[in-house]
Image 1: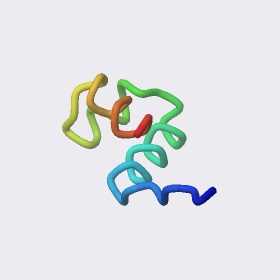
Image 2 (image 1 turned 45 degrees about the horizontal axis):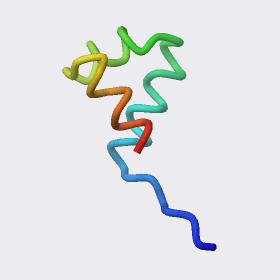
Image 3 (image 1 turned 90 degrees about the vertical axis):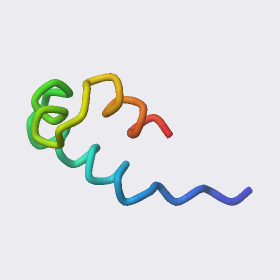
Length: 43
């Protein structure tokens, strides 16, 4: 079974959330809502 490679946007979102240790702060940095950030990471 092949694994899907994450999009660049998902990787940037994940990196920002990991660096800030907060989805809220990462969302603010990327000018997204917290919900949009979480959805990008989940997909």
